[in-house]
Image (cartoon, rainbow over all chains, first blue to last red; front, side):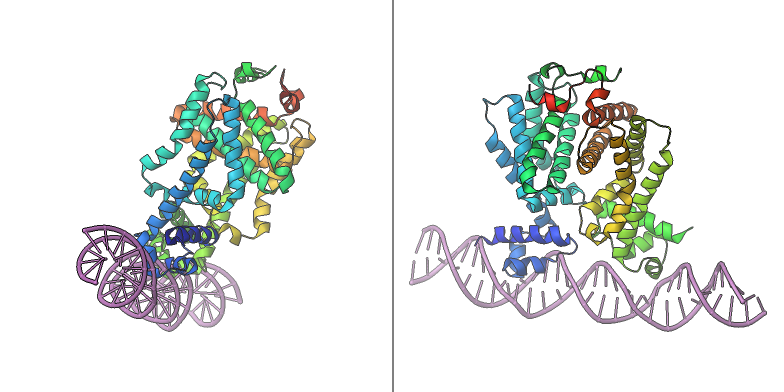
Length: 201
Length: 201
DNA sequence: TTAAATATCGACTGATTAGTCAATCTATTA
DNA sequence: TAATAGATTGACTAATCAGTCGATATTTAA
């Protein structure tokens, strides 16, 4: 019933299937069951629609992640929740996850103000700071940690996609152990080898 | 002087900056210094241009990687070369690397025949098989190994981009050790802990 | 040299599309 | 009830753009 939401939902589906170019605003309006002019009542331009859809989706994921945080969790447990919640959300909302990448590798990303983008990574950066302060995480630049975890999530997500549903959770669990081994502080894994020493084999 | 190449070069620059939609064929022709009709003499449609540019770029990278292979190299050394060559190529050819992702997250990818895509990953799959057969690599599905390495390369590449040039090679080297620790067989790292055991801490 | 094939040109077109606008409808509020 | 504000409509337009085409130039081959 909410026409604005209907437009966003329809735009998501069409953009993912046909791309930005291949999706006329007229088709979005038609498929959403609203008049042409109604679309431009809510979104001044097509570009605005593309950007607001992106921000809406990112906020949705961030809110879910925020709702999962529990102050009493250990760092590892908190990290595990972020990791699992993200991948499982991506598996359930494949269109939305794909759309984030689609915008990310398009000139539209540059149109989104840096402060909006920063707002969305703030939560993750804060968690990284906390994790590092706890000593459970290897000393490395925030940027590196953030990027490594993100790309690991992307990789495991893509792998999970190729798997039968009943094996997905196992894969994700294994992926978690891998990334945790990669980033956790040496003394916190029994018998583990610090990165610095492994270089001098 | 080669107009076909000039068109491809110009298209790459414009597609990366303005996207597929934001780049009219007329502008590509104009910037490339050829007539409108000349573009369509070499590329029947805009879609063809987009696809052939993608295949050309992928082939360029694959040829460079192929030229680096040396049968006498150890698995680790061969893997290191593939990893370094890819990231350094990406740092030098940022537009081309970005364009690959741009196509990857667009409906144009679906227009590229599966056999063409398969041909391009063949080399990597073959290397993975060889590495696994050598026993130096942990037992895991090809798909997983391929995806993990790819995403690690993406992650380290993106991190290297944020770094001053003189520190990039160090970061890439550290990234290599990380991914190698992640995928190499337990007995081949001194004092390392197999993944299976580290789960039962 | 001639003929055929290929490359290049750029004006043109038919179709498409983002965005407008004046009119109508619906809800809110005084 | 009356008045105001916001929501909705869909026909319309001005502009753009992918692709065509006939003419001309250049290369290749016989």
